[in-house]
Image 1: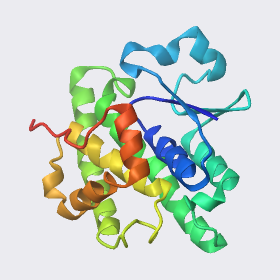
Image 2 (image 1 turned 90 degrees about the horizontal axis):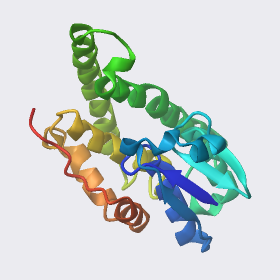
Image 3 (image 1 turned 90 degrees about the vertical axis):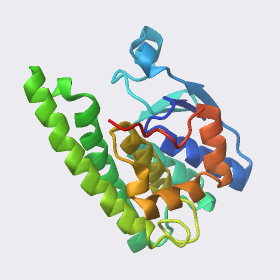
Length: 217
């Protein structure tokens, strides 16, 4: 398996999953960084694999798979012993419900903050989109904090899951959006603990990312 990832992007989620699979099964994987700020996702070579020009991309036996939820579902079904999603049918459905919310609601809200130009013309309209999205993103982080308060020690209990990795991504993004993680103390403490878990630490080291993204705006 080969994962194409953007450092600090949502591709961190399957990246952590692959590290967890390596720890649980010994199965190795390749990882290749795609430098999004340099536009490498739009290169002819990359577009031949993923015409959407997005990360993550997982290539398995020469076959490409796109979209984070599909990739993570595949990884869990391929290597269920890693425990990245629950085995129980109902618990898995509940976990996938939260995963889908993270992917189709929280993630796009952040996109409206950092890429407001995709959604409106004119500085005033873009500024309003960004302002509204910042408020919504804050509310969503508050909801994740309520989940983190119940983490035991992870969101789904005693096993690291894809949801934990996504939660870490969002708190980092919150800092970039001007949200002080110290204002979400339970969430910040939970993510601090996550960062010390071996598969998470390994993925962070490879991507060269850290938790301290907040700069007062």
